[in-house]
Length: 521
Image 1 (cartoon, rainbow, N blue to C red):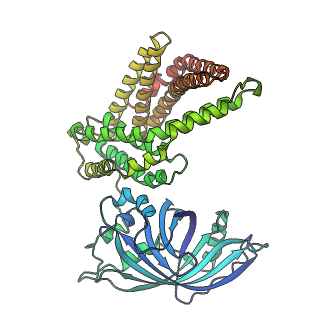
Image 2: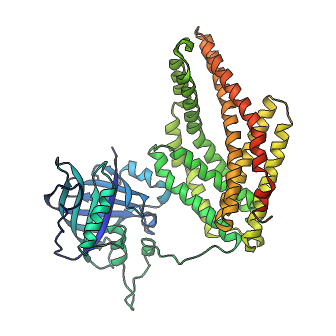
Image 3: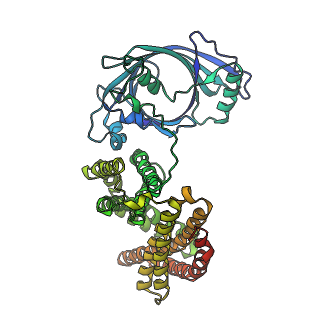
C-alpha cells in the first residue's frame, strides 16, 4: 500500500571531503546527532523520451537505508523544493498504485530503467533541546550511470537539508544563512536525477551533450519569450490550463482537498478559451476537443457537486436550534448522501484511467503542438483580446436582461443559470487578457466574477431546494417528520430571492461603461 509524505528540502553543492559547518548556532538547534553512513542504490524509471523528467517527476526503486522501496516524487513547489513523496513496497516492477499517479504523463508509453545512482550518505539530525528532530542533513557522495550503454559514469558530492515532518520551514532559511556564511552555495540542480541525466548523456565530437535519447527534456532551458500577438497570448493560456490539468491528475487520484474542483476549473477555462477565441482558433479543431472537455467536467462533477451540496445542507442543519430538529434529520442526510455518493470515488478514478480521457490529453497536446491559428491570431492583443472579452460581455448582458424580465419561478431560475455560465465565460476572458492588457482586464474579470458569484449562489439555492424536497418526501414515506426539511426549504427559497434582489445592483456596478472603456473599447 502506498504512503505519502511531504518533502521540503534544499540542495547545496560541495566538494569531496567537505566538513559540515557547526549548525548548533542556528536558532532553535540544540544539537547535531550523527546517524552514521548508509549506502543507497537507486534506479530511476521513465519513458524513453523522459516524460516524467520533463514534468519534474521522479520515480525510483531504491535499496539500502531505512526507506527502501519505490518512491514517486511529485512537485508541489519547485522553487521552494517542496515535493510529495509517495512510497510503495519493494517489487520487481513498478507498483500499480504509482503507475496510476503518472498515467496522465506516461499514457500508453512503457516505463523502463533509465539511470542508476549509487550514493554513500552520511546523515546528521538537527535536534531541539528535547531531542526532537528538526531537520535531516545529508552529505552525499553520488555516482550516476545510464542503464543503457553510451553514457559516462559521473560522480559528485552534494549536501541536502530536509525539514522534519511538521517542521517549521523558517528553519531552512536559518540553516541556509549559516551555510552560505561558511561558503556553501545552493545547487543549480533541482534533483539528483536531473543532474545525472544531463551529465551522463552521450557527447558529440565537439564535447557537447547530445539529445538523442530525449535528455534535453530533463533540464529545459527556454529562451525568454514575451507573447506578442493575440495568438501568442491565447496559446499561453491554453498551455497553462493544459499543464494544470496534468498536474492535478495525481492529486485527484489521491483524493486531495479541492483537487476535483480545481481540475474542473481547468477544463472550463480551456473550453471557455475555445469559445471566446473562435476568431483566433479554428473551431473545426477546437470544438471536438471542447466536447470532450465538457464530458470530463461532467464526470468529475458527480463527486464534487454532491460534496458541495452536502456541506451546504449540513451547515444549514447545524445552524438550527435543536428544538427545530424534528426526527432523525442528520441520519436521514447521511443515508441520502451515502446513497448518492456510493462508488463515486471509484468512478472518478475509472474515468482518469479510461482510453477516452487519455485520448483527450493526446488531443490537447496535438492541438498545442500544431496550433489551429486563424489569420486573426496575428492581430495585436489590444484589439483581438478586447473584442473577444466585450463579445462575451454582450452575451452576458443579454442573458441577464432576459432573466430579469421573467417573473419569479422555474423559467427565471433556468435563465439565471444560463446567465451564470455567461458570467463565468466573460470572467475567464478577462483573466486570459490580463497578461496583455494589465489592470483594466483584471478589473473587468473581477467585476464579472462578482456577477458570477451572485448567480452561483442563486443556483446553489435552486439545487439545494430540489434536494430538500426529495429528502422531505423520503422522510414522510419513512414515517418521519418532514417539518425540518420544509423549514430548510423555506430558508433556501429566501436565500434565492435575496440573490435575485441583489443581482440588479451588482450588475449595475459591473456593467458600468468605464469598466469596458478602460479595456480600450
